[in-house]
Length: 208
Image 1 (tube, rainbow, N blue to C red):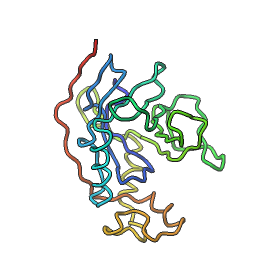
Image 2: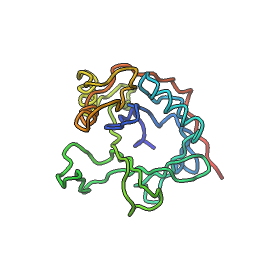
Image 3: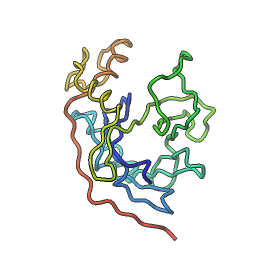
């Protein structure tokens, strides 16, 4: 589906991952299910933590299965057997998104995707334990030209920002000895070096 084309920034993701694509996934069931190989077109910090995340995905959920809800507003995400690990909500016009203190979230746009982990994966009334936003930063237009979105500028600003105190390669750009305030500041700056493996040509397969 066109909505999923392009390069997505995992904004405020703590897991040492920054950008990825979905159009290289294998699409099933009239494009209602996709299988994403976590080894390809998925950038990670070149640290022990970044490599550890990839190894974890390889051993537990490869390929990652994303299934669209009938109303095409939600993605159930997990391993190939269909088990739920977490969810993604495709934001809609008219949604009212707010920060934990009740303030309106100012920088989101409809169509961006919010990753959500509930304490009980299939119970949205349980506690939210992890959350961040996917924002499209670039895509190809009908002429095959690269189009950068305003979110690209926000991503670039964070990449060019100085690394916060405590962000050393040994500490995996993680929370080694940081205060709470330092951990929050860590969200703003991103490593200017990433590693990724390009994906092979995309395939499309329909299950009957």
